[in-house]
Amino acid sequence: MIKVADYKTGDYKISDIYQGGYSGMKSPSGWSENNYVQTGSLGLTTDPRTANILKDVSSKLSSGIKNIEITGIQPEIFDSIPNQQLKEVHRLSKLTGVDVTLHGPLIEASGVTQQGFSESERELAQTKITQALLRSHELNPDGNIPVTFHSTAGLQGSQLLPPSKRGKGEGDYKKLIAINRETGRMAPLEAETKYYPGGKDGEVRKIAHIPEDVLESHNDTEWNNTLSQIEFNRRRVDEILKDVDPVTRMLYVNKLVAETNPKLVSKEAGEELEHLNQEQFAQFPTMHAASTYAQEARKSANAAFSRAWENTETEEDKKILQKISEQYSETLGAQENGKISLKSFDPAVQSQALYQLIDALKRVPPKVWIPIEKFAVEKSSETYGNAAFEAYKKFKDKSPVIVIENPPAGSGLSTGEDIKNIVEASRKQFVKKAVDDGMNESDAEKKAEKFIGATWDVGHINMLRAQGYSEADIVGESKKVAGVVKHVHLSDNFGMEHTELPMGMGNVPIKEIMEKLGEKGFEAKKIIEAGNWWQHWQASPFSESLEGLGSPIYSMKMAPYWNQSQGFSQGYMSGLDGAWLPQINYETFGGGFSKLSTELGGTAQGAQGSRMSGRGME
Image (cartoon, rainbow, N blue to C red; front, side, top):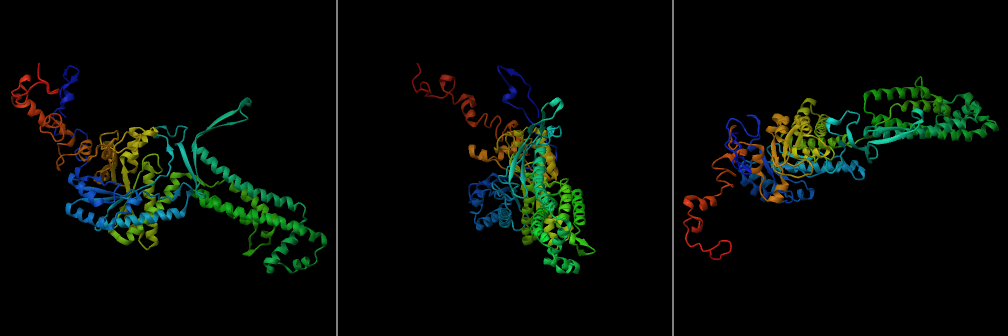
């Protein structure tokens, strides 16, 4: 950019009025020669409030756009769009050479509601998402139409600390939303300060607990409560057996076995049972009570072990649980030489085995409470992976592409790491379904990568500024997701609210973000979402976006660029004969001041008096 010297006249600078010419050697936006946003890759959205998409598409094509996104974010409006309109939009797109994409309805794919998690809700979400995918095929039957779905739709998310503050004794979270895998109940966890007795010289100890510590405490507390209940029933067994002599105990065991499997009882034991004395017979109800407590304790222990096995997160813990199982079986004597052992029916032996089991299980508390993001990735990826595979089964290589979008920051699954995780997990689910259906695993992985990716919304991620993120942090989130991006949404804001302005009107670092997205980002379709601009200015944001992105005016990879237009003498949107000096300016002041009245030195006749009041000059 050739700058005009800052000569001052009065209280203004010449450069404030005339910005100077432009240099054809370099884009003023700072983009490199090959990396800038091409006009042809940009597109507009339809009005999300109308189902009459044919009319809306027709009106917006006049701006010269090459891409348009049908916005069906409201489920009831999306379902109000007739299939005939989808087909007509396809025909119109073929006539005009416009590519069509779809923003699918906002659906909570995880199955988590305000009441907690529900598998039936997750399955319902999967059905709705699958239907939206199948319907989108009408918009482009011969290609792979990108269909955007938000990673979550209203799910409350945890608040992470900015990257610069993590790992410095504060953990990763400012507020952690935890969910119970078994009940679906959620709980917000924040840093806590607790006070404990027994410090140095009797002082009260003050200890700060980060949210991760509070989460671990939740898991440990619930697990200890579970094991304590089992231990309570086990102790009752020992207390009851104190009043029973060993001989009577074994007689009861033989009687118990005889009632369930007579073949295991020896002839001698059977004869002893037939000649019980009165004292032995009187102790049988006591033995029955001990046996009942032992059975209840064993049932609870089996459930606890299953809970630990299902919710363990490492192979090391799995190995520990396997050894615990082997030790429990050995102590219980459940099998001896391939046959059922009488020891396994003895309440005393059962109590001993349970004691060892409970003590061992204390070392591997299950991760029942986990961060909501982790749970949502597990469940939502199942939904998206299954839906993508159902669409692929029907349309094969012409199937729509699911692109999962980061929602406004503050919702669940809104960071770059979250989106990368859910895309990769959804692809794994697709592969699993495809392999089960008979597809080669290598082919399934290629299909999964083709039909599942991410939509990166630069305005949504910028809202992390409200949580203390810096510009560098925002750009860093884009780097994390770069490898899976297939689609981009463009909107600008100031990082505080979910506003949608044309690029260049807020503080979204678009140049740096696009550079981190790399080749995939520049090649992807980029849809301008500027709802607030439409609302308040009631005009297309296309030209303003071209300026903000520094896009070239012509199709060649060279200057001039749209944000240099103010330096043109002829002007495109502004400049000396544009908005600053419009035609009326020349009509009034040009050509020898022919339009000025004689009172002001011009040649126009008949001006009588002030043009403000209409009164004659005095």
